[in-house]
Image (cartoon, rainbow, N blue to C red; front, side):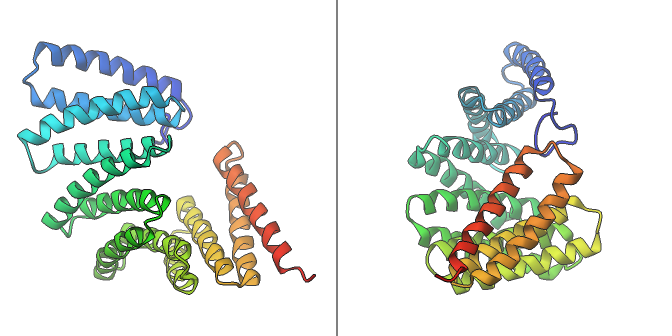
Length: 299
């Protein structure tokens, strides 16, 4: 309830009540049996869910408190079981804390959490390189860390992370071309890499990287035309391509890409008119088109 990746959207208050009731029960059970590893693990994961929800709802202090609690539990459990579930719980807590802290501009602290997360994700990916979950965990951690590195001016570090992930995602997509998740993961990595290339001044490489995810996402949409997520991914890929084309000095191509993205965004919001995130995206895309048209207009 109430989380962006949950089917029952919008009921944030109901979700928070449910999580707090569950948290009270698990806290009491844990107090009665502090050595019960399973209950402690459930308690930590519920702190994570509540922290994530509170972050979405704008309660950053509350989110920080619950994510810190989740981190402490995960650290204790990871000492007892250095492989598997507890390590992943620790990785997730560090990623979420890194995201949350970055929003307060404490990028050094965010970087420490994300470096801890990526170290765990790297270990798991090395241990089980064929597992989609391990590859995706590393992708999430590396992209979050790359964002912090880029914000600190370390674009070389951000690019290195993107290229490293690309090797794994390329191999996974090539090994199973009918696997939609693998193709989508590859598209996500390529779009992120395009961003870092653009920001580092290599606009032509950014355009080349951005073209590939558009092809991938369009193929996924062709295979499942009713999939709104696939349609949204096409719009997102068009946006990243437009930004790369603009950086490469081709405003005409950039406008064409962004107009296609805008048409899809309007199609999506027509089916979900109350989606404020989509409305914000439409305003941003339209504003970008206007700015590029001013650039292209002759004196």
